[in-house]
Image 1: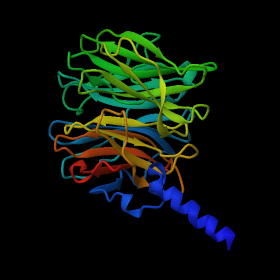
Image 2: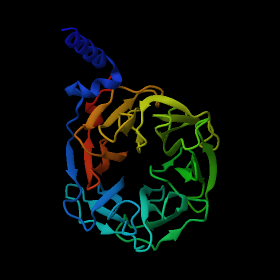
Image 3: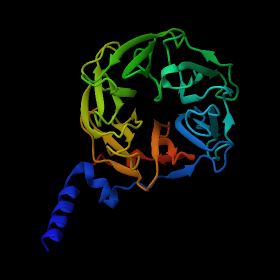
Image 4: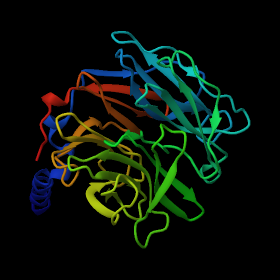
Length: 349
């Protein structure tokens, strides 16, 4: 009897904790307008690390890496297109490096309308070089591969942003031997030249953080959230007051992180939407949370996926119609696309 009473009290306490409500409050599970796998069959066994972009005509582009398994030489960058009102096209191979794997594509459209497909090439993260292809006709045709100078990697996993002064800020990071650091690459001439700023480090932890996601706050500051290792165990944050050139202390947030990718977007209604794994131990569940104060505090997360398996490395954008478009790894076998209307979702407390 005492054991049963203890269990009831423990369950009640967990329900009262905002960070735990996703596991018990079924009303927090979202029902997306669209929830679909981008492809059913593909010429690769595994896939991971997707990115998504909306074109002016409403078409969506998605890209990811796929091959026998991550780090295998068979891994190439793939892309699919979804015409507005249509269905996703058959995946198209965008790279051809049979003797070395490719990694982490990132789609970006600059102020001139040029579409960029950034990616990395190398046997492992410590040997990466940055590369990209571009398109000036809304992704109908693509340039040859351009290799970035040594020391530049481009956006490492999450999308760049265009700041209010017109500069492009590209969130990146380096996984060197026994030390991980976040960095920012900044261009004031449309991507012709880049300056590197940082590092963003968590004091006392060498292999601490990577893969920043950034947005510009209402007051003009740039805010960054970063993936962390289990040593830290939580998403970390930092703020720049000068357009990404210098950064304040890197500190823990109240949001857990199981050493997995995150992504955020500043929405037109002033809120920030964050997609992440709301746990310190696994890559499920996958959750969506909102902030009304540029990431200082976060509402109770909603659930996108909570079944067994891996649901990770998400990407998120807001389309011209105001809806959130998200892609993520689905069990390492598929890439899933989800559409949610944030105007119908409150910031839960």
